[in-house]
Amino acid sequence: MAASDHNNGDGSGADNERLVPGIYPADPVLANADWLREPYDPFFDVDWSVALRGSYTKSTSGEHFNVLLVPTVSLDHVGSRSAINLTGSAEIVRPLDGQIDVSALRLGVTTGYALDSVTNLTAGANLSVTRALPGTPGLASDIAIAPQTSSGGIDLGVTRQFGRFSVGLTGALDRNVYGPTTLTDASVVDNSEQNLWSADAGLRVGFQATPIFEVFGQAGLGRDMFDLPSSVLLVKTDATTATLEAGVTGRWNEILEATASTGVALRRFDEASLGEVTTQLYNANVVFTPDPTWRMTAGFATTIEPPGPNGGGVTRIGYGANAEVAYTVNSWLALRALAEWNSARFIGSTDTESGYGWGAGADYNVNAHTAVTADYGYDHSDSTSNGVQDAHRVTVGITLSR
Image (tube, rainbow, N blue to C red; front, side):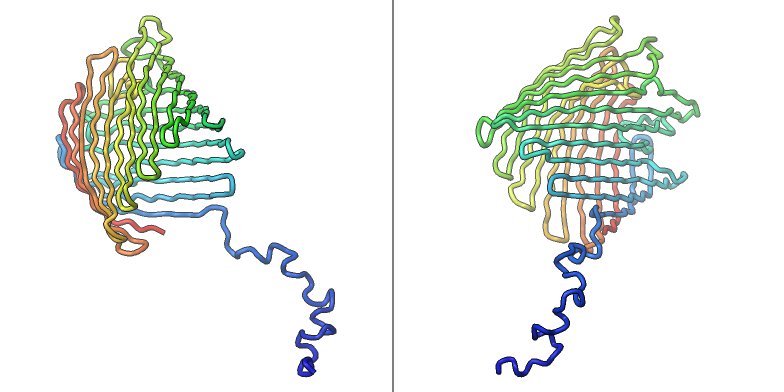
């Protein structure tokens, strides 16, 4: 009686044709995973933005107004063990009294793979083509067209945990090419003697002394190989650089992270007459995020490298410090400020460099896809080759994003 109101063919009875094998359904839904897939499931998550900016610069070399178009694209993939990120950006500039040019082109890819619970592999590649705009701090006033700098490289790394110890190995290969410099008197300076290959390898060993503090030691070995001999020294300035550092890192939850290290660097040239260069290394970095609305960073770094097209001698030893504060007022408004300082000396030359700068900016989100930006920056530089230069820059723009 309970089934007396069931009509034949409604799927309730055991003799209904919907339940007869081979008639319907031909293939049960759960027997094939294709039915469970979303109709659009790309391998990469795509994000992009296009910024239109106007920049006014008043510097020692004069006044400059540029309109910049900055497209950026990012592709991300995160798997159960792997992560891939590809980024690309360009800066297309239109000076008030010049032709449209591409002042910067950057491409990069980073990957990571968890081989097991204690071993991670990383790899990356990068390519950039840049040219400094007139009025850029540190660019000599007698330079009409700055040299185009092309650089690219690849890097590999592996880290493994051994209880409270961690060991990391890294390797990198880079290529730097410098184009000619055109001066205001129409003469051209060839910078090809600065073109070089660089190879680097590093080893880092860390020990987690407490849940907060990690002590570490790291060693590095680098090799610089130039294409041509120096036009001044008449010999190639190929060199090998060895570094040795020790330091400590402290991590307090996700609020504060600080690292400090010191060491020594030795740069030895293949040409015996050039001798060797020894210098002390100092490095530090602090990241402070008291809550999700504030982020404060500060750092100090020592570098030892070839002098480049704007320097003299055989080695540039540089020191740089920076600080940055970012504050998210609400979902519409974000503020930021930064300051930096740098100084350099050149071994084998009396040239020196120094400078400092500061700036502030704001982002206002009109909606989820549109933001208005405004920035102000001041830079001061003093170098033996270019003299004293000051620059004030104001930039406003609008950014459209996905």
